[in-house]
Length: 175
Image (cartoon, rainbow, N blue to C red; front, side, top):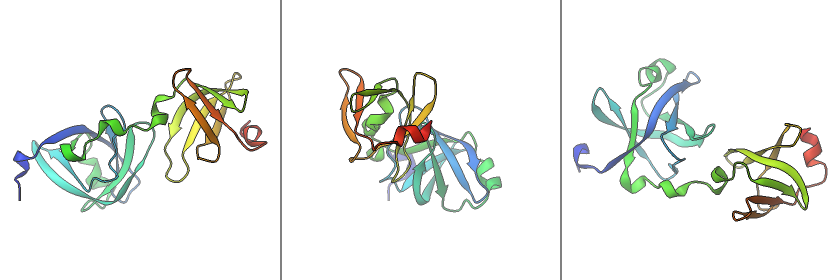
């Protein structure tokens, strides 16, 4: 077993708040969204000491550049509140800043339904099994567009455009 002091660790962010009352917490990433799907172990710096924690279940996306996680041995919001502002580290092997989702970089792109301009791409909500792209139309209305292989036609990075083929009425439901 390798001592923690000899591991090659990378700081990915910090704990910002408790989520709920059963020991879940929110980790805000310092830069891009990092892929922690394959990570089983994170390290929290508590009073200058790196302490390992295992995830109780896979973390899930929460707002932009954050996740909700449940760590083993943390069972209440009171325990989590003691850890707010603790830096979070992962082993460099588990660290992949290039795993940024393509939709995290499309903010401001023109979004089309076939040839009809819907509006500008806004926030990407990485909801497991139901990812959504918010689109703001010219009247400042927010439209929620589900992202899946059935609707998404093309992402044109050069022209900063996203093309969808959406079912009739989907955009009108949002207005």
